[in-house]
Picture 1 (tube, helix red, strand yellow):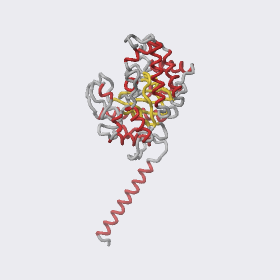
Picture 2 (tube, helix red, strand yellow):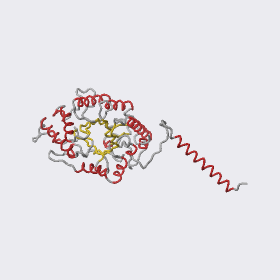
Picture 3 (cartoon, helix red, strand yellow):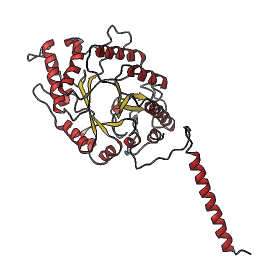
Picture 4 (cartoon, one colour):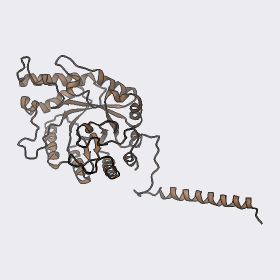
Length: 372
């Protein structure tokens, strides 16, 4: 007859054996090929850039203050490319005709180099955040075409030359295509266009190329999934390429909302632009938990909105991984939900658009993005 202690040892052995068998069965069920629903082991010691090392660069837009303390560590763990959010834009880096301000931009480039990160430049020509002095002469009258073009050339040549060999890609031209499908011109009616005419567009790419022949030159815009705007961007870039203008990539900003873009529209945009034979970059990615300004019922980071954000991020990265041959980088616009430029423009307040929460911790959407 077995003693009570021997019976206990037998039961423990049986239970342990069952646990081991169960574990093996669970692991075996996860190892089948082609099963997209299989469980995936997630290693929390890895960062976004580790999971995507065989796909494309994972970048983030930063300010100088992002490069200190907790956020600096988050950046170093998760990203291998940086973009200066604001400090390389024309007005901050070139506030007066005969004065450049390099300090803030240099801090970001130095941080990137010290930590083995690549660096994108943003942006050389834009209708916003450009000093008013660019468009007037010494008497305060509207600048002539010749004066405006010379100033633009000097600006681009000086900035690109300052960072030659340190910045691998430049957003050369930003948001020049109109959102209006019925407008007479496909081009936004900016000061640059009004003073210089369309010819400045080809010139700025050529000037940037002359200043750094190895840099990737990008046309960057938002709402690229809108069919009308997509076609207008395609037509402009194709025209430039046909003329031999050095445009190397199209930047799709990716300031999206839950439910937008659809997978169909995202795929159509990728296919349209990649047919040009240029690289594609996602340059300014964030996903608001709202569908737009009118989405004001049930505000806040609710479980329902969270799930829609998760679904959108998952769909986007499923498509991007599939299209990895045409994408060279994905850049998130800001580090975490602690601070996003979209919060200042939202009717609802905070829009929680990123993969890291207000405490700089990964959100559920993060784990879906790295689970593949």
